[in-house]
Image (tube, rainbow over all chains, first blue to last red; front, side):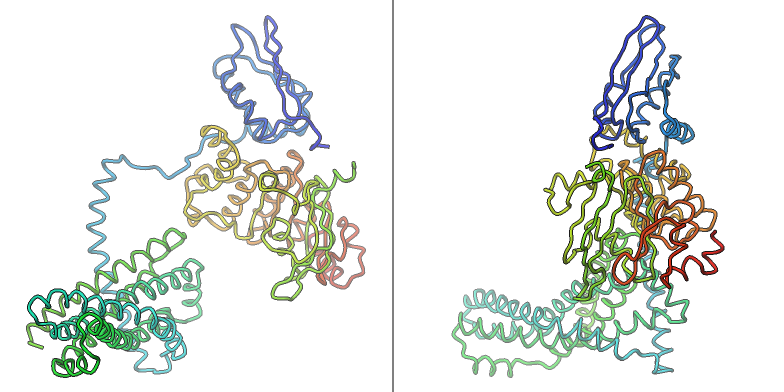
Length: 379
Length: 254
């Protein structure tokens, strides 16, 4: 039947007072593509009228009909008489339907003048920074209130959820963090050995590794890995729940999303980040030891001896003190960004990116502030 | 041969299983060209699964599916794309691309499958928007800015973008107000008659079944229990079918 019908064809018959288009076959999307150019520029010469003969058409779809309708519309606007002959009932029906439809729509929302847009963008970004800071503070406050409420009613702490997130963000992150810390220990010891050998002070490589790994690098790297690994996961989880209206559903059931979603993640991260930091400390020292042995010939027992002599408890302490603060920054930023997701998948991507970038940025800024603070109080 | 040509979708011995549990078992089905075929059945009977299996979104364990006379398993990449041009699918929640406007959503298949110039694509897009009864202002809106009913219409417009021969509708009137649903029925019916569409419609809307369906297939016990016209359905003895068509809602719809 229709599949056997011929492809759409078109035949012109010129007469002194009229141009007739005989149409036949399947006038569908495919035929429309083929004849679009021809019909676009078709114009009867002089005083000719256009007659379109539909009698041989087997089937007509909206794309095919639209081409003919558009032709007629254009020519009528130019003052040419156009007639459709031998219309079959279903085809007439389609054409009639098309005639009622507004043929122009805006594809995208209107865009402002680019110059204005740039100025507006700059202004908006500046305001957004302020708004973002305010919102973050508000979110911190909201979390504090939820936490206080949970302290008063300990039932509100969702213990299974806390353990779940501890496993996801903590336990499962141990291999990657251990590996990174080990490699960083190696690199620092290697670089230190090259420099210190010039002064014959190879043994101080151990001090250098201890101070840099314990005070700064181990915990900073741990925080950055966790921000990338778990921060993005938190944002994506909460964001997808927002899109799916699950967060709204929680509210209507009387569950506080802050209690259910934010607090367990925050608490879990604050518990596991110091532990991960400790793992990184140990692995960093081991890495430094391995490199000292290879490069400087310092035996493990010498290395440990030297570590004991140079070890200041505060080196370890300052590093681990920072961990819960970094954890809070990462958890709050990522949950906050997750809550801000709305509607589209694009927004989910945007906020996930923003969550990681902001968390890492904030962690580094706060780390610098800690350094100054510790130096000031002399530990 | 003539009869072969009259069948739009022929499914034989279809078995679909998830995690080893069969959802559809040895299902046979014929949908005739130009018919509006309604699929009903209890929730979980596998109506949507059948739809998804036919368009190739679910894997089947066994069975053959012929669409428009072509065995879907024997197609190469190009033939497969050609078949995909000849069907359109409206998903239950519209499944519009959330980062594109309604108009851009409708343009996606047009740009992907045709080389029509941009202005014609935009006009066809406007046409489809009008055809499904969306106001022109809706074109430049994002899906999240629309109501559920408007999203459905936009989804239908996208499904119809390429003037397909077969349209798969998954619960098209669910979530629409009765007037909107009736208008949607009317729309499907008139598009069917003027464009000669074959419509595969999963629905629970008894009014829709009465208003637009030429034939009805009842799914249950993992296969098609019976197919036939509305009049034939009313005479069935199967308990579920009796309850369905003779229940209070069934009576009201008549």
